[in-house]
Length: 379
Image 1 (cartoon, rainbow, N blue to C red):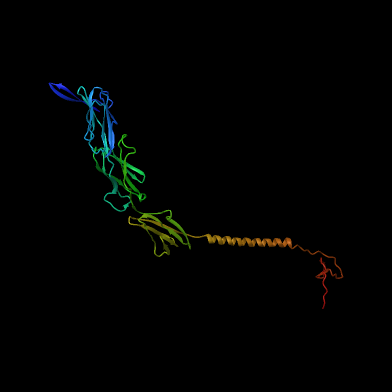
Image 2: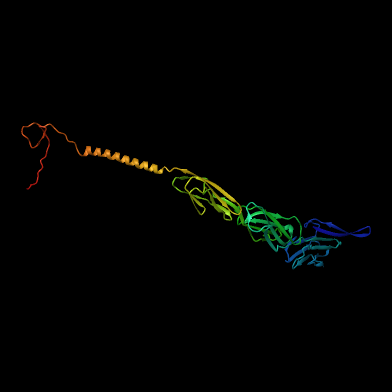
């Protein structure tokens, strides 16, 4: 915006009038700044030139608390330079004095910024481990930064962005800023790390990427009540008579839970390392306890008869019976077909005994006989 100061005579008295000539490119403003605005880090140097398109002027110059040039005659360009800019409220102004005594001027927009001295994160009104499901407030403290209206506070859990905070309050000078975040951690957040980041978004004229300062990570410890692993210990388990069954009870918790079995003391059991070996039907209660709370599960053991030995004995008996029947049938078949058959035929009667005829009740019956040769017999 170009300001033009000119004088007029009103009722015999000189009067100074101020006229706003429009934006930087307005044809009525003979001044041009290069660059048109500056973003400077606190303590850094800065240099801006001011030129005029006027041909009928007496001179020009810069007015500023630091780096002012004074009035320079018959020049078309003047430069404002500061080696170390530390004035938070500085408003450098370039002006030109025309021959008609009018004095157009233009103010240089300056953003002086400072990155925070430190950024830290803490838990308000609490120390030590957190408890699952309880709300806690984290606080991010940002020390000695400016300007506030360009600050963006970013919260992270690990590398996951949570949310951003911006500020509408205008403050050119350094301030301390605090922002808070409410969390309600779960068991999955045990060991999670939270961070906050202070980032200065200074627009297109500012440095890229944006200047940032990040806190050290805040690691949280979450305590939570035990959770029994139901996949390892079903609520109903069959046990066969005469065979033991091992019940496994596992629980996840922080701090480490203590496992205890509750049962009828009259029942024979064996307990070791959180596992319970049972021999009889009944109800068995597994309880997991830590400083946060208690969880339990009731296991019903039901008795089943083991029919496998009976089935095995019956099968063995049938195998023996079938084997006996098979041997019996086979022996009959073998005797009839392998040993042969013999029949007696009627022979012709003879009054003379025949050596080849067998006597059968006074009747001679011819038998097929073979005479065997005998070796010599000595007496």
